[in-house]
Image (cartoon, rainbow, N blue to C red):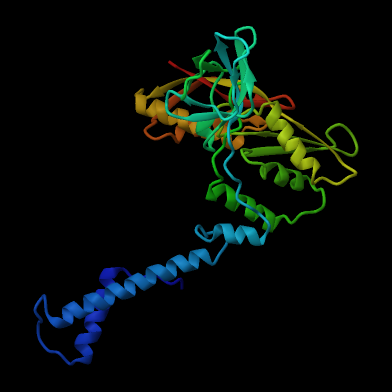
Length: 350
């Protein structure tokens, strides 16, 4: 029989009964009697110890540990992925040619996120472009093309307003959370490295900061080749750019067997739109259905995979508050070509 941790009330009652029995006390006792006070104090201490033992028991097992999780993971050679700094480039307008925008120049976004130029940039023909990097690591530093930046300290001969270039400021990611670290650790325990098995490539791809899901294709381009594609769900765009693909390629190349040739590529995103009639037709229920569909795609959409219509209907049905619905589009299983990934599009509500 499994041990059931007693509640505080149960411990108080047990302690009170034990004290009155051992002291041979007879009759009813006052609510604030010495025995009653002692019972509550002793029970409180015991309850606290039960809680601490509960916590220790969770830390002692890898799949339930939280505070000790990084130490468990380190035993198996799995390290928490650090947060990444977003980087890109920004364009400046100059009024005096030859003016230098020095490395270390700080720019600020409207929401307070700050960036720093990484090298000197010289105004030529009234313009200059400088590489920039977020001062703080994390996805908050990512910025879309055209985002306005402002010089924190004005530079004579240069407009204080700057803009993010066409490629945006990307690659910023948060420090890896416990759930992701635990999953990678358990994969490492259950699937030890095999010197180039398909799951080895999956493990290597997922070790790169920012990578959240990956897929491996043995014999991708013939004997001796392996294909790897991946996404970054926590970025503004989950499809990796060229720099992010190169980072994974370099990481895997440093670890793959010398006899294998790895090809890392970005999947092709294809938006999946939905047309749904739902009852009741409230904003809260529609939001719940959208959240369920997004979670479904994050779990089950994969390059070249199939999303079954019955599963899509099931996902809509489990949304909180949904009583009945009709899914008009898609009207059949969604089958994607090799390398193509279904991503969340728009929902048309009927």
